[in-house]
Image 1 (tube, rainbow, N blue to C red):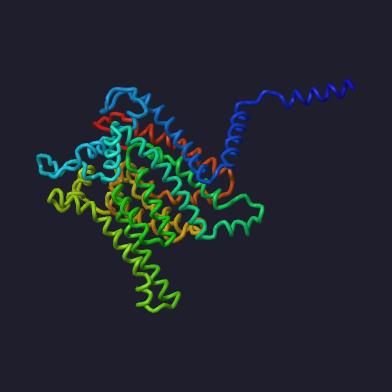
Image 2: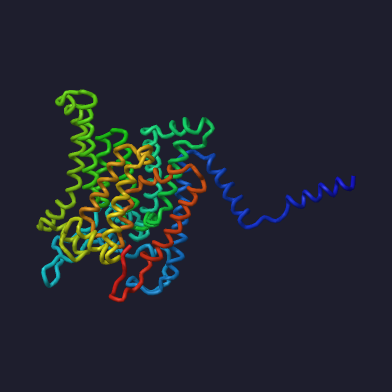
Length: 446
C-alpha cells in the first residue's frame, strides 16, 4: 500500500513540475486558438487581423521611443505622433486646404512637390469626419486607417474564399489527402489573411495613409469581378481609383478580361461574334467605365490648374526627372547594386513571371486575379521610379498571399511565414519609417 502511494505521489510530482516558458506560451497560444476557432467566421477573421495590428502597434511604439531627432520634432515620439510622419502631413494639408489651382514652381519653372500627387478620397473623408466630430484630423485619420484595415481583412477573406471556390482547390485537396484532411477553404483563406496582416509592409495599414482604405475597395472590386457583378463593382472601383493611383492597371485588368471572355465565347463555346459581343456588352461597359475612372484624377488636375500634365508633372517632381518608362529600373538597380543590379532585376522579373505560371498559383488563383497581378506588375515596370517606397507599392499584390500559403499545408511552414513577416515589420519600420539623417541630407522615404 505504501509503495502504491509512493508511486502515485511520484507520478503527481512529475505531472505537476513547473512549466518552462516555452511550454507556458504554447499552452496560452493553444487556448487562444481553441477559443477563436469556436467563434463565428467574421469574428475569427477580425481577431486574426486584430492580433497583427497589435503587433504593428508594438513595433511602431518601440521604434517611436528611439526617434530622438527628426524634421517633425524632437523625440522620443508617442505612437500617434510617430504615425503622423512622412506623407501623412500631405494628407492633412489636403484635408485643411484642398488642392492648389496654381502649381508651385522653382526658379527654373519646374513643377515642385505638391498635393496633386495624392488621391483625394482618404484625406477628404478623414477631414469631413474630423470636422463633424470636432476632433483633430490626425486622430481621426489614424482611426479611419485602422478600421478600414479591419473591413479590408473581411473583404480579403471573402475574395480568397471565392477564389478557392472558383478554382475548386479544396475538392482537389480532399481527393489527394482523403476525407480526413484538415485543410478547408476557410482554413486556407484565414491563413492567407493572417499573412497579409503580418506582411512586412502591412505595418502601413494602421498609418494615416490611404493604403488600408484603398485595400478595402480594391479587394471588394476584385471580389465582385470574380462574382461577375460588373455594374455593382463600379462604385468600389471608383473609390479604388480615387484613393490610390492604381486605376490604370485596374482598368487594364477589366478590359483584358473582357477581351479574353469574348474570345473564349467565340472560339471555345462556338458563339457567333455578334451574339457574343452583345452578351458581353455590360462587361465591356463596366471595363470602359473603370478606364474612365483611371483618367479622372489627371483630368481634374488639368481642369483645376489649366496644365494638361499637372498630375504627371507633380508625380515626377519627387524623382527629379521627366517621366520615362522601364529605364529607371535599370538605372536605379545599377545605382544601388552596381553592375549586378540590372542582372538581379532581370532575374527578379523572370522569377515573378514564373511565380504567376506555377501550378500552385493556378490552383488557387482564378485567371482574373492572376491577370490583376500581371497588369499591376506591368504598370510598375512601365511607370514606377524604383526607390525605397517600392516595398509599400507592392501591397496591391496581396492576392499572392494565397498561393504562398497554399504551397504547403504544414503548420510549421505557415507559422514560419508569419514569423518572417512579423520580423520584417521591425525591419521596415526601423529602417524606413524611423527618420535618420543621410550624409547628403534627408532620408529614404518609407
